[in-house]
Image 1 (cartoon, rainbow, N blue to C red):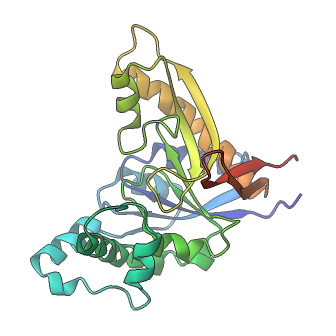
Image 2 (image 1 turned 180 degrees about the vertical axis):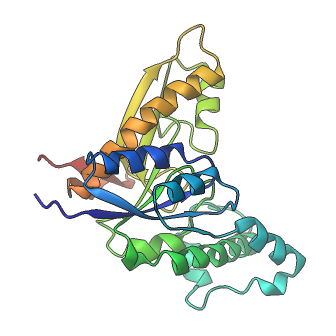
Length: 261
């Protein structure tokens, strides 16, 4: 099996604890990979300091500033030259039955932000993009830049819930509020929906009667720091096979098979 070093580009928004777990796993040779660049939508993200301390180049695509400028002067929100609104609109699943013009405006604004990321992290500069607490939904414009081969997706995300339950921004909070007895984390490839991509791996933990939301989050994070490096190593070792299968409901869904060593 090839031991080629997988080049990782990471996107973060906050503290970057999962990023740190991946950096540490790379340094310990638990992953045949190296984090080569870290980007953030938040100039104040502490994860940028983690990256700099590890000697990893960083960049900022300041979504807040870009979007604020667009609200002030809508004419300034000119899409990237290669942005095809109709094509992106047809592929996205974020606005399945929503206002068409609103969807185009949203996707155009996000593509402008994503173009900044693509400038700093060109698709040919990394083998895998990991979303490590990146609190922005990526659009088909960004996804298609990396996923040139549908059978070999190259964007991975970690989610704080046992998908498909509790997608969205507050997985642990939703899990706890619902009264679940089990919580967990999921690593999946990114597709055109929100937390709907094919699942690579999951880990779970018991939620006990004396647990509160803080203890649930602590349990979950501890598992995330194990799970993400494990799934990244499967990608680095070329052990993930993605295939489309027709389900009982007639829908076609992509699934991930873990190949033997």
